[in-house]
Length: 492
Image (cartoon, rainbow, N blue to C red; front, side, top):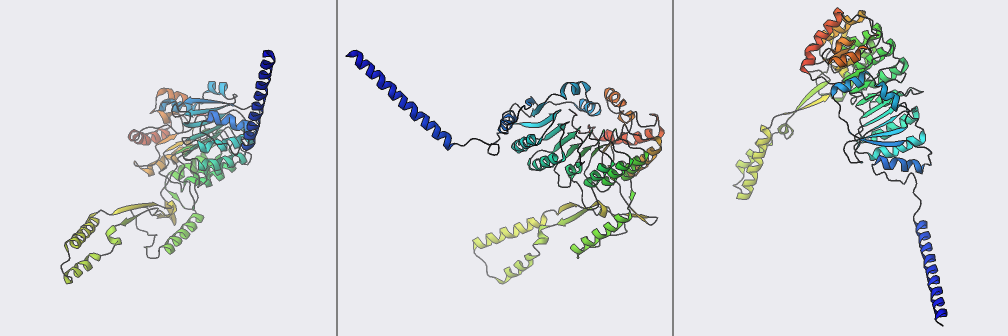
C-alpha cells in the first residue's frame, strides 16, 4: 500500500509541475504577443555610442560592422597641433587608415560625454548613414565630426547636413579624402549653416567647385556669418578658382582662417587674393547692386537720412549705431504730472508715497546712460572713396590667417600683397601670411623645419626683398596678438 501511495503522490506532483509549466509557457507567449519586437525606428538612443552603434547596426541586419573605440580627450600643445596641420603623420596614416573603426573621443570618463567622432578609412553606405543620423542628435556634447576617406556621396552629405543642423553643439566638420561626384561642397558652407570650422582637404576640388564655394562664402546679398575657419588645402584649385574664392572674400566679414596651401595657384590667382586685402574698386554689377540696396534701405526708413554721403565718416554704414533712451520712449509726462499736482488737493499718505516712488523711478531712468545698439549690415554699403571715376571700398580686414604655401606663386605677385598690407595699417587686417618657411620664423625651429618641405613649390627665393618686407609688416602684429595655430582638424 505504501508503495502504491508513494507512486500516486509522485505522479500527482509531476502532473502539477507540468500544469504549472504550461501556465508559464502561456504567460510568456502572452507577454511576447503583448510586447512587440523592437525596430530601428522605435529604438531610443542612450547617448552611449559604444552601446547604440552595434545595436542599431543589428536592427538593420548589417553584416560586419566597425568596432567602436572610445578614448579620453587629449590636450595637445599649439606647437604639436601646428606640426600635425602642416605635415600629416605618415606613420599614423599607414597604421590606421585601413582599419574599420569608429573612434569616439570622450570629454570625460563618462561614456555619455562624446565630444568628437572620427570615421576613417572605411566606406559608408546608406544604411550606415541612417545609423549616424539616428545617433548624432542624442550626443548633446558632440562638437566635431570627421570623415576621412569615407566614400560619401552627395546625397549622403545632404542627409548628414540636415542632422548636423539639429545637433546643438556640433560646429566642426571635416570631410577629407572624399571627392564628391557632383562637387556639392558649397552646401556645407551655405549662409544657413551653423558650422564654424570646415575642412575640405584632399577632395580634388577644381575651379568649378571653387566658384560655388566662393558664392557660398559671400555675395552682394548673402554671406556666411558663422564660418570662422576654412581649409581647402591639397586640392586642384588654380588661378580661376582662386579668383572665385577672392570674390567671396570681398563682402565676407566673419572668416578668420583660410588655407589654400598645396593647390595650383599662380601669380594671377594670387593677385586677386592680394587685391581683396586692400582697397578694391567696385565692378559695374556691384555698383548697380549697391544702388538697389541704398534705395531699399531708404524706402524702408523714409524718415532717415540718406545713406550715401561723399563726406568721410568715422563709422561705416555697414555698422550703424542707434542711441536708445528709456526716457525718450516715454516722452515727457513729468510736466503734466507736476501741473496736475498743483490743482489737486493734498492726497493721502499712501497715495503720496506711491507718487513719490514713481517720480524717483522716472528720475532714475533719465539718469541712465544711453544704450548703443550696433547692427552689422552689408559691407557693400560702407562709405566709398571716389578716385578716377570709380568707387573704392575698404578691403577685408577681418581675415587674419592666409596660407598659400606649396603653390606656383613667383616673386612677381609679392609686391601686390605688400601694397595691400600697407593699406591695412597696424590695426586689424592680416596677421599671418604663409608663403614660405620664412613666414613662420616666429615659431619654433621644429615647426619651421616641418613647413620647409611643404613650401618649396612657390617659385621665389627665401631671401626675397618683398617677402622680407611683408614679414616686417606682420611681425609687430604677431607680437601684439597671441599666436594661434590654424584650427584645422587632423587628417586621420
